[in-house]
Amino acid sequence: MASRHFEQSPQNVTDRWKIVEDQSPKLVYASHEPPKFHFLPGLLPFEIHPDDIQYGYRIMGFVASRVGDKISLRAFAKEFDDLKKDPDGFVRVSFTVKDMAGNELKQNVALRVTDQAVRRGANINFFVQKPYCGACGYDTLYADVAKMFEAEGKVSFFTE
Image (cartoon, rainbow, N blue to C red):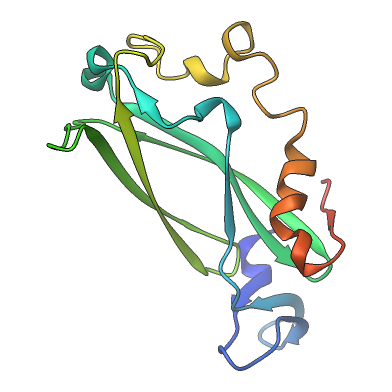
């Protein structure tokens, strides 16, 4: 589904499918609800070894948004270089994700700097490599994301 099939709704309008008339009519999903973000479980707990700060950090997960009675998932990854340890012992990173309608969600992550964290060296993809982390959360992805929307009723997924 191309992003042009989605648009933002005014805050006082219910999310819905609608026909947009322009050069050729198209069915779009209009939404004002911000997306949710599902971090890959392999990243948890959020911590980093002091020796690895120099190599940066990669956030990985999925942008999840409701589209009618279905959930849309899009993979997301962002690398952070030039990390700096704050005086309180954390490295902080922030990022913003958008759903297909352009609604935004800002995420702030504080990585605890600790000698107890796994030393991964320059391999910032360490936490999603099966030999190191097992299934890494992909095996339960749909069930885990559904739990995020559980209070909002039954959901199913686009499986294109």
